[in-house]
Image (cartoon, rainbow, N blue to C red):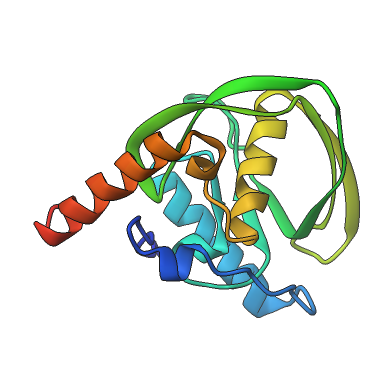
Length: 172
């Protein structure tokens, strides 16, 4: 296991890639999962998609446990949202690829997600609250969508410009 560099905005060439399905959850997949988890914990964060470390595979790790609690990592291969509630909720989101920027995002309040675990076994979960938000955020990453795509064009343009400037000045 090793901590990998996280791809940051303005590197949209990588972050906007649509990730490929994982054909089989095997030892190599579990190794990527382990690197992702270690990277996420080191950041620190609560979710990470493989594309954020430059791996264009449909892999996500999550851990919503709070500081001091026993870690409860989740490993999702090929996750897909199969149902979304019509009712929405707002949550202030951030992203490890867009550090120190947070904005309110409106998403479906509940979702059902199908995925394979780190052993390749199929599962479906019904999620609400922070878990639903986090799942949607990370699955968006797999589809080349960033959370800033859910905010106004003006705010999105400002944050992209801010990160482009920081990158040019060598501050990222």
